Length: 439
Image (tube, rainbow, N blue to C red):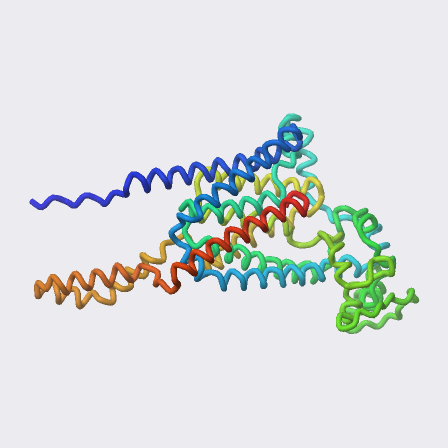
């Protein structure tokens, strides 16, 4: 009886390297979040340990880069990567303009007088504060993880491709992340522009913006006359026309912005906010209306989805718990209503699953080999019947080569690209951490 062929075993060096990468990435991610939280527990140790951690991670990436085996795959992913950056930045610009628009549309007086929406999620958290032990409530209130943590966790996941922790190319998962982020931001913009919701923090606009106290001319004509009079609302529904007279309001300030003057009616500038339109966008921040859905939660969910698909393990489960912690804190601190966080979670999950065509953790080479095998199957059977060993060997070689990426770049181009990528990326990380608030 013929003995069954033993399964092919991976070399011990490859197994140990992969296990070391998996353990190291999980440990590095947990260590990063833990050290950054020391800013609240022991600022002195935080200031000591954080530069050491960043230096260690940067040196590890730089030392590993010359031995990375997939730079040719990364080079083929450059153009989609750059395209996703442009798409994401364009989406952010549209979102910033829209945030300013909805913030100034109703005027400063409306922001101060509009009551927050009733939110049962907020009530539930207040009720739990009365029932749960004080230590648990303190944990729920703690700023364990914030927006920049999720962004840095994703960057760590992307760099882990150097250690074979995730599937190459690393630029592929970055492209998917930024493309999905851009689509999510555009959907979010269309959502919060469509219906103006009052902020859960009524004092926000007065402390952040210099906006006119009266509503925008569009709101003066189409909203104010019908806002509180039920008979007027019924009449405008029946006639489907804005029939009421507009009250007298101060004239709108209209600076000369040259070719960008079309933005004056959208951004509603005031004399003290700077001479150019982009000065207003730098102050847009997160807006002072409720913006359905939460952008912070979208980032958190996309980061968790990326870790779950590309890496898995206990650290991915921990990140999902941190996502839930962030959601309850967004509601607890009244940055968002409960509905904003709930919608952000399922929209982020669905969007990530819909963009699998950009990058996937599944082995595409296996699918190509199976397709090639199906293509040559009849020829392989004929060769087997004819006992043509050479033909069988050639066909199997074709199947194996079908799973390999086609080389298209010289070794010099690949090395130059590798060096430029590492230098550019590490420079961006350093600038992000030094020129902004915690990156």
